Image (cartoon, rainbow, N blue to C red; front, top):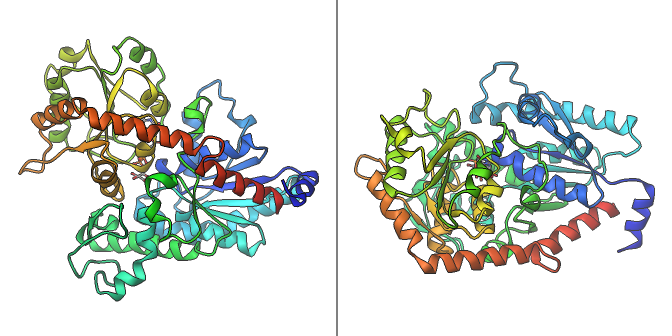
Length: 464
Ligand code: UDX
């Protein structure tokens, strides 16, 4: 530990201000990073938009103790009460609406508290906050919540444009299969992550948002991501300065996190306690994914057909446009072995010995969580980076199988049964999944690659 660090510590507590993009899959990992820093002596101010802040507070359990650990505050997103908060609106509005409020908030904290803000950690999607930090002379870090391969793709955008593969708005001009480096997923240039959004305007908005922010944060003091070196080592040479510090699991949720948008139902854990070891299919689609009613029915019937116990997270907004309705008689038929319900403590669920496999939409957080618990995957990606994550799981790490749609674009009940049986019967997949679990654990243990990166970051932020 350097003299600078000791001097800085003598001067006061390091105080990090963390600011996530207002979406569930962004708030959770940044909250986990915040807890890691709090454990290392940082004071944390966690800034959400007002809209998200209210949701988090409503979702907190009554006996929540979170305020003693993390200071939760909010600023407006500029969209007004009841405003349209679609991804497009958020991308368009936030970068102009939030900077002055953030500056004011920091100035107020610095005037009123002896612990001034000593660093700002901004989600890369909130690149404008890095600019605020620079303007105010505060050390800053950007946080990338997805995989390093996707980030490498953003770094290489000028090259893709120059080679005529995409145009300046991110729209594909040449169909090709590309691989950015060996051991990284191969992907189709007509299926880049921003292409899955409806309509050209939306695709261009998301493309510009990702690319602009990638440029904004490229010379930030620190660039962190929720991944670990060993699983995608060839992506790091393409990502100057990117430091993997994951998997960020905040002690597998042994402590309270305050990052959920929905109240958590922990009673599923006692239900899991009653299930045989390695028998339960855990089904969850993260916070965004929607299924249409036909697909929802087919999934229900597929789970029934497997004959196995299952725990299925059915968010209130999982089915597009209307409340989910189950097939006739389904609930009664599966009552003895199936559990459908609200938001669960996913990390604890995945770590439970009764879980046999994880049917997932392949969000990056879910991918990292499944990987850290050694659970084989069944991949059902929906949009954005999830197809790339599926390619990692299926083609590169080989720790799961993909579910394929039929000619009508439906994943049939027979396909679900077939793939559940296949993944559970595949010893090689299980062995590889357990090996990755070990690798994940090592990376965040003392001496591991992610732990070392996190410690370097902490020391530097304490020393500045
Ligand atoms: C989104 C994108 O889909 C994802 O691909 C991107 O990388 C981050 O933002 P989301 O769709 O919500 O996130 O999926 P995911 O990244 O998997 O995050 C979901 C989080 O919610 C996970 O941390 C998971 O543990 C948590 N979760 C989910 C629960 O805690 N309980 C649940 O019942 C379901």
